[in-house]
Length: 302
Length: 220
Image (cartoon, rainbow over all chains, first blue to last red; front, side, top):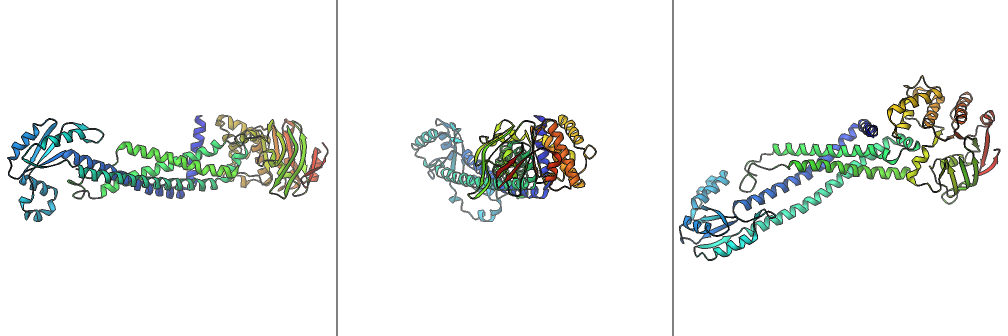
């Protein structure tokens, strides 16, 4: 068994070594295709983070009726409700300070802002969470909204449903777009690898003819090509991962990607398990592409 | 060992390569197949190592019924059938040793078994001293010896040769024919397609003559 694997490996290495330029071009092209796919993955990961963060900041935002009550006293009454885990009061000064922190480059504009335009609010965090939604449980939100309707001092309560719904739609759309791009990228990878393998087979046609003549099984003809395809796919994926990581390091993430619209600390890279799955997946796609290429060759040569 | 029952091979509608051919070569037998160009010699050999399938009739080779042979079983047949061609079909960038060893490597045999077997068969064909040479450094006769060594290294039950001396002069042709005779003496069934009448007379074995796809003479 081991000597067979060693022979397959040696044949694959010989084949790769025989056409290094073709292999390099193929791996580079695969890397570009997979980088696009990786970029979509990064966008989705960060969109997820964005939705999570917006949910984590406040489950509900309470707008008190102007002059109705002292903000801390109202916050204490809200906090005393069943199911409320905590509150954070944000008076007009604090709201302005938040804005200044969020848009440090627009200080001159904010200097002229009328404080009366900024409402004081109470941010409410609920205790009961829904792991699937990664936010508050729907029942808890409904219960809190119902309880707060009884408070005369409260003008309105925003449960963020509109914003979250919009983000969810954006995320669903992004996922669908990502799936289409993934399919296109995988098709491109299959196309590139299968054509490279066909070039390899063409270059080795004398050898393969003799292999068939002396009774080599299809597996012996195909296995080195499977290895070659898997190596091309994995190498392309690794190159794409490295390239994407370097690109993300090179892009200035400050400001554009920070709070309030981004994730603190800039863009998040793909999680390690996604990178491992991507490399293994690309290797598998390489095997599939090689199977298609050798299948055609074997049928034609049979 | 080799039996053909009313075998017909047709390419397309009009091209009849073999027409109702029946013949028998016993185990350990030796026969020449001869005839003019286009008589069907090469087609007959191709049918015998399953490179082609008969249009009609039945073929038995080394216990395999080729008419019913599945594609996945062709490699098993070919391990029992060595084939030699006029144009040698060697791997020019591999040494003599590697060319012969390749036939065993692709069958999954371990290197420890391959080396002694290849060295033995190369000595048998008189190339023990040229194992590390590249094919293009060899004469035509030597290249054909390498091809024969490659065909014999797997110890096939049947050896087929299609015009094996077509590119060689008379003296080298005789040397090559001696190798086939040696293989025959060792028990291999040998079938050689040739139109070299002088060579056939010199070897003195059975001659099957084909013309227009039909057997017109068989002295066996």
